[in-house]
Image 1: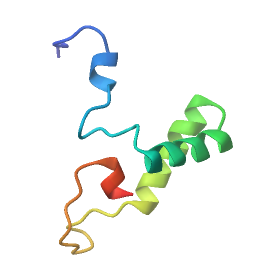
Image 2: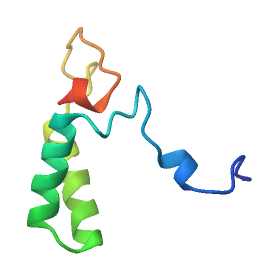
Image 3: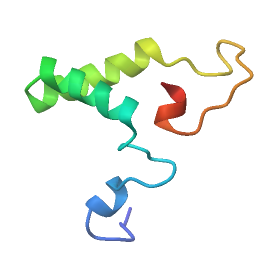
Length: 73
């Protein structure tokens, strides 16, 4: 697979869907980072938080469809 843009940061930037600057998202990030200083532990904690706390709409028969992180929170 070839990258269209060579700088990985171009794929990680916030936009209208990737709303990483939203206050609720930032608060969760701060909470998880404060409790998990190492990058691997932090990534694991973030993955596990989403796995436990964010249900797939179809799986739980929720008619709402979320698009952004802040909507999912």
